[in-house]
Length: 191
Picture (tube, helix red, strand yellow):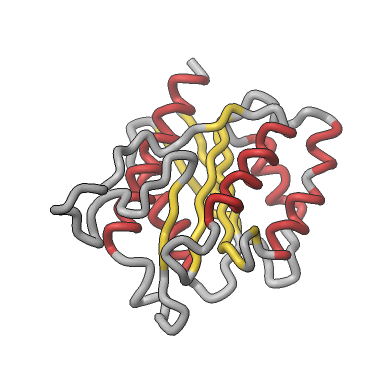
């Protein structure tokens, strides 16, 4: 049995919706469970949440991309992760990440690189999407991996869209399949 924990911050609800899709995918894998831990508006987690991260087989980081990087709330969580880092508590766990922004590009790759670096500092094993991009002339906006992300899942939600309107179904299906891949990797890694 593998257990995936998705720890994320969501400023307006769009990244939460993406996190829920990742959880749905991870929990849909045989012999796997998944849970969400939301970072508060103040950038904090409960003490019990830190214990859940320590017990997890896989940790997935999620944050909106604001001004080319993670939200300050996620950054506060990441800075606080120096405590588990000092004791190598997350070493050799599976890691992955996802992000959402209002712009199609929005410099989301910078955020995914930040999440990757965080996981490498923690001694974790990073998992990318493993998906081909939807980059042909026939591609449609709701195709899988339409944003062409490899290092982690990306989603786009227009700045004036409610969480019910964005991310779009293709981005959410990309996130769900990404969650499946993470849970499968955790199961293989922990044999």
